[in-house]
Image (tube, rainbow, N blue to C red; front, side, top):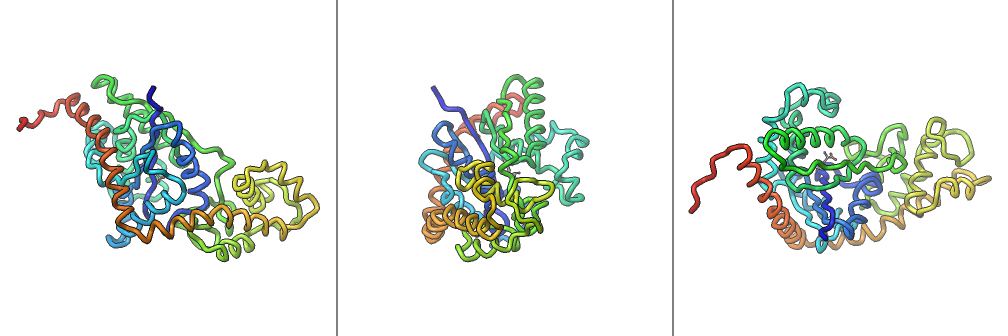
Amino acid sequence: MSRPRVLSGIQPTGSGKHLGNYLGAVRHWAAMQDENECFFFLADLHALTVTPEPAELRTRTRATTAELLAMGVDPARSALFAQSHVPEHAELAWVLGCLTGFGEASRMTQFKDKGGGNVGLFTYPVLQAADILLYQPQSVPVGEDQRQHLELTRDLAQRFNSRYGHTFTVPAPYVQRAAERIKDLADPDAKMSTSRGGPGTLWVVDEPKALTKKIKSAVTDTGREVVYDVAAKPGISNLLTILSVATGKGVEELEAAYDGKGYGDFKADVAEAVVELFAPIRERYAALIADPGHLDDVLADGAARAREVAATTMATVRDRIGLLPPRAG
Ligand code: TRP
């Protein structure tokens, strides 16, 4: 029996991947590889919507590849590739764009929140739908902020299927649990994010010293009790979440363990747990980033595997929608 297929992507922009990316997404990707046939990719075409410096984009694409491998994506079991290496993504995006209503695209909150921008940003969710549908995945592990994009993807799949005959698997979202949404340490009401950076972001390749310093300076409230209460104690609650996910211990168990102890002891333990969690990642990253040839090999192999699937889907799509096939030979 074939394994269920899973697909997900991540942008190669910003200064790297952080604790939120790891706990909320990539850790799950790594864990899914045994039971599922996985396709993971660097969304470099999506990254163009923020017009990065060319040299920077190239560097970040390799660096993100190394980070994903360091965090446990295993190229022996999963296809890891760059979106731009599989031209079918852009091709299917055009086709799906012709099935997307202007008003429908205008309702996407991410575009509205950014207050407009280029046409690429406007059609971003359509490219994302193409990324997904090409691989016929049963499920797509994403963060809560991607839920609306997944809804559009499902709508487009159903619309295409009913107009042209069954072509696409309608994928199910696999949204991470709320408890794993990591907040910024310096501003615990906002989520930890790449664009924010700064003293509240824990990068997976941070040195132990930097991690410890950021965690010890994390914003807390004036109380003394280590208890989980997002409204009254967002900072402490965030640190409890981090410690819980890093150690596998339940929040209640941790609350009991810190009963009567102060924030200082608690923060020191959170720092130790995160340092321990990231140490092997940092070590693997250092080795990987020193060998760009190997990273390029991994991406080439991943793209070859991805293209086999993508090209098959795209051939069916071209036929269904009535594009004249080019004369053979
Ligand atoms: N939009 C996603 C994000 O910012 C990245 C992405 C692009 C993606 N294409 C995808 C995620 C396809 C899942 C599936 O996180």
